[in-house]
Each structure stands twice: as C-alpha cells, then as structure tokens.
Image 1 (tube, one colour):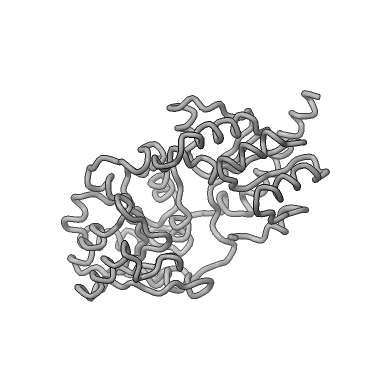
Image 2 (tube, one colour):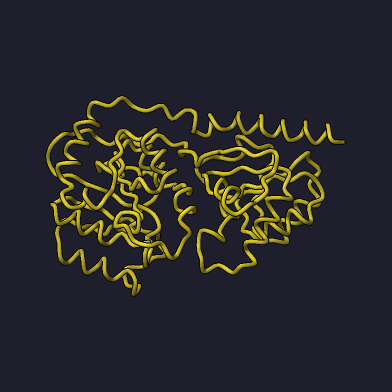
Length: 327
C-alpha cells in the first residue's frame, strides 16, 4: 500500500476472496461500500448481489481489452459490473475508450483518482549536467511484444548505464528472462539488480538520472497484437509516479498517451522515446540533464493522497445525496 488507509477510512477491511467480499457487502451497515480493484468476475457478482450502495475502483476490473487472450465472458462481466455499480473511481483513461469505442455505459457518478505517490518522502535524484548517465527501469518486466530488450540494448550501446529492477517472482533463470542475463555478460553498461524494497528502493531510484517506461511496438512502429491499442494508450503506471516522486527525468514513448501526459505534467523533464532517439540517445539525454538542472520542482500536492482524499470525500457525499434524492 502507498498509504495508511486507516488515516482516511473509518473502516478499512482487507477482505480477500469473493465470498468474504460478498459477506462484507451484505452485512456492512454503513451508507456505502467502496471496493478496490476486483477483477471482472468479482465485480460482476458483487454489483449484481449488492444489498446497498456500492462503488467500484475499476483498476483491475477492465482487463478484457488490455489482454486479447482473456476470455470473451470478461467483456460481459466488466460491462455489466460498471453499468450496475452506483459509482466508480478509475485511475487512468482506459474507461474513456471503453465508453467511446465499445459502448460501455458508465455510472452517473465517476471520478478520476490517479495512482497517488507514496506518502514517504524519498531522497531526490541529484541534479548533474555531465558524467555517466544512469537510467533505471523498475517493476514487472514484460515478455513478447512487452519486452524492453531492444531499448536497453540501444541505450547500452551508446554508453548509457541501465539498471533493471524486476519483481521477485521474475527469476533470473526463467527462460524468458535469460536474454537479460546474457546482455549483462555482453556489456558493462547493463546492470540487472536484485529486488529491493522500502528506503533502499528509493535510494537506488534517486541515484539515477532517468526512469524508463516503454512499449516497444509504439517505439518501432509495429502492430500491436497482445493488447488493444486503446488500452495501452489509456493505461497508467505506478512506476511512472515512483520516477516522478524521486525527481527523475522520464524516458517514455508519446504513444502511451496518458502516461506521456502525466510525465510532461509532473516530471522534471520528459524525453520522447522514439526510434530516432534510440539511434543516438546520448546528446538528447545530455540536453535533458541541462534542462532538468534548470527546472523547478513540480507541485504534486493535487495528486497526493492528501490532495485526493478531500476530492474522494466530496465524491462519496455526491453519491449519497443522489441516492437519498432518488429515494
């Protein structure tokens, strides 16, 4: 968790599993329930069987268009869950495309609450304008068309250090991960680090100059097959907000439209990740370092937990007031 939920909610139940969730929705006597990140099937059953007013956080609900391999029944489940909910919160713009392109009916009450920065105060990345350049990539490492291998190779070939931090469940001896182990043996500029947490994680992030987020089909002009284009354009990323909070510049393809918007709005500097950039990235990054040194610190208060909490409180009041008006 990026924040202590007990600071903001009178009752915060960590109820895992469908039957426990159903039990909470049936027996909780409060005015409304806000369920965070159920999958499509869970959300469908929760909304259809709800005994009171129920709000959905749909971050993990809308997955049918994110991965084309998901069964078609997921489309029905998430569509009906969103239609039946009394309101919803969403963390990115995927739902906008679901409404515009696929005809999803949205609840009357919905609000965008972006994935907030953590409540810790990490060290800020040191600003420099010369010397070695260090880029970090953290979080889940995709495979197939979600790989970052070509991007990393291009950066390392131009004498740019890349530090890779993956999820613990992704082991270095996994077949799809071995290419990164081979790359580490090929070049001194690639560093596949061990997973780290807490203060050490923030220290490692802050020791770098840029954070990397990429989607290589957009970088190299290739056809998207695993995901739908709109899902990638509209999705957010928690790693992006980690980079922002650590004060890093961000290297990101403009094609991931919502993340590109966030990077330009909140990062010290945003570098467009394109095929042309990868052909000669060092001068671009050196220029970005100079720009970063001159930039003012961005104000993150509106997207912080403290900034989002009053907005969410007003949203709850609006939903309850509308429900009382309707009888």
